[in-house]
Image (tube, rainbow over all chains, first blue to last red; front, side, top):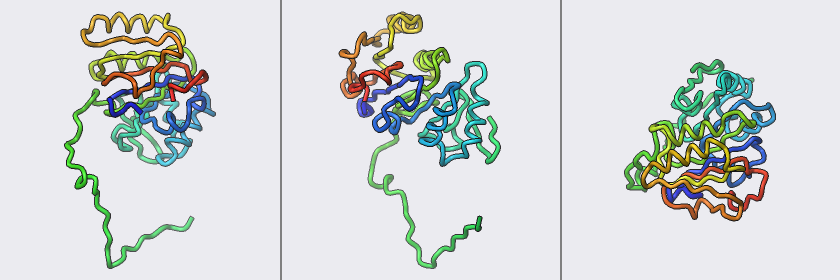
Length: 102
Length: 133
């Protein structure tokens, strides 16, 4: 939607599941996740992360990103260890299963 | 769990990437900074006062962030100081327009937006969503 005219869309929300699933959540390619409750996080994991790592590791990564108003970035257009998971925009995560390091 | 093993058949049927052959296109030039995909469809999720808007303002104002000609904003309230700051900043940039939507009826679909625009939908997920969808 809008990409042929080079239109970029940002949806800012408090609850992930209240965003329309089929046209927005399923089509999104960039996620910025600040500190949030477990239910929301589990939905994001099930929809976009579950093929990359177990939930416990994803949660651990989130907890490492969130202090001091930080956030986790998921760029679905990037390869796994080439910027798909980042602390804020510019700190790329390397996943050496099962432990992760920035 | 049993260990998996794959055994290659002596007769092969390799799958090559036909996209490279079928499309004669050169790679598209980078639309934004190095940290962003060419087409951004982003979801920023978190409770209030967790600096979601702050992260977007950083993307809109940093040279390594987004590059755009128009900024459409549909916030719950246009009185937030960060939007006033954005307006002030963009008013000083020739050729870049700050276009706020005051209410739902004014909101346009991304397909109706001008070329090379960024649209922010802020905390509208629980309201009428026909344009946002």
